Image (cartoon, rainbow, N blue to C red; front, top):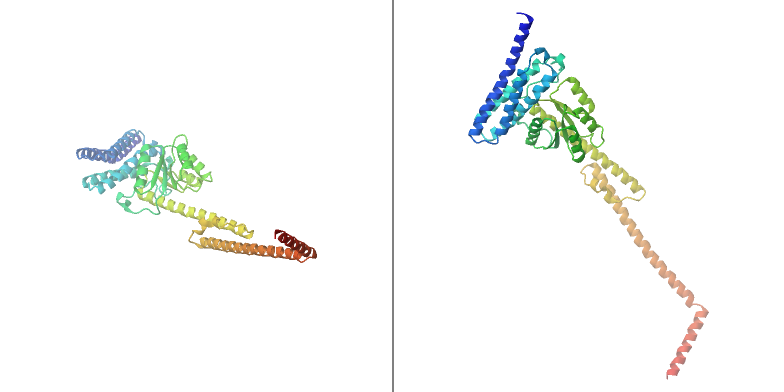
Length: 394
């Protein structure tokens, strides 16, 4: 067998290995669509159509492979985008089917998800490192690896809930990711391009941004540069999500300030854990920033106390804290109120003393006048006039 025959055989084997899970995805989704229509399960039909369309798109791209040596990062990207939709919708439909007790649907959806994982494992293995993808030794443990089983997604998210922004130019990617996040209890907004994302960040507060790398006009790298270059936005954590998982791309995102990086199709368990960790880190950072602001306000208050210009209400927010800083603010307020009350008492005492002094001064001035010979002469003359007037009236 010559080299051409061996290459042809190798390509045929690859196509066969890729088509096998795709045929399962397409076949099971078609059967589930028929069952859903027959049983009137209208809520499942739109997502089943998306799974079916994703399987068809993957099959068409696999059928276009003409040269095994041409397989590289570009093909990897083209395959992972629809594969992400297939796995994402299958995972959400599995949750819905379990909740509604649709055991037959659960079984077939698990087969679809398993077939998608097998397809992912195959393309991860077949794309050579020299084509732009790192070797297995260079790839982080989670990159290029089949997702955990859907059953593993039962764990609770680390950290609290947050306000998240999903940025992706692909509608199905936005839809699957945002719905996954909403099911975890997060408040989610979506942007279809980088410019729209920056506009939304400038007008709405977000706790986390999930940002696609490959987008037209303004790619994820440029959006990340804008976010980390602005003092108002730099503390918003960013997780990069992309079908590209080259080490160079990962390193570039981390160097630009990204908090983390996840490959498509994303592992829901890993996604949940990474988001929880980012939100917890954001919460702690917000607490640190607020603490430093409170310290600054107490420092300003101390200077105001020193010059006698302190207003207790200026520390009202800090005084509500339950830590040592709040206790210090309450002490400042108490001291200031005591000083104010003492000043008011002193002012009252001074005012009373002024009144007494004024009265004494007036009494002394009167005494000085009444005790003079001139005043006594005036008194005698006044008495004479009174006597004359009294005799006249008689």
